[in-house]
Image (cartoon, rainbow, N blue to C red; front, top):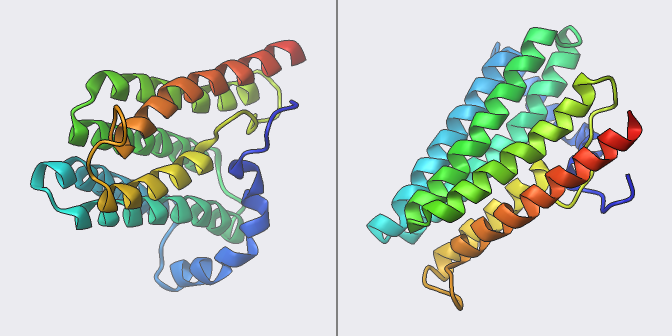
Length: 207
């Protein structure tokens, strides 16, 4: 698939960096599913903080939401590495991880949209994000390798959410027609669907 490499494809390169976190999780007696659940809880908290930030006028809530999203992304790597360190993982654990990741994506984007009251953009962003991830795993379901390519993958999205969350804490007002969060939602709405179509095209041609 000859498109820009997304950050998702760099995950194997950070495997060594998560070793201390994996060791800590083992010492605490956490299971991979437990780590996945903790990651999801942080995503929910991040979405809530993003929703409250502009309503309460507290910039620090955007910073807190960004931290939660960063931890969600980190733990999303840790749970997989922990599963491999313990028993190589299981289909049930993999399914749970994918389901919680999709719900995490939804609550993060929904929180951003609710905070700035841009529900149409939020709908476009959520569907774009969801379809991007769906096409990536659906290729695997029909016998191909999982597709990580395209314009924007999950790791890219999380990095953008973190960056824009921090930017919104400094510049909460409009930048042109939209606030920083509004621009991010518009970006996800457009580029998310373009990425999904790229993945569909690649998978369809490969079958």
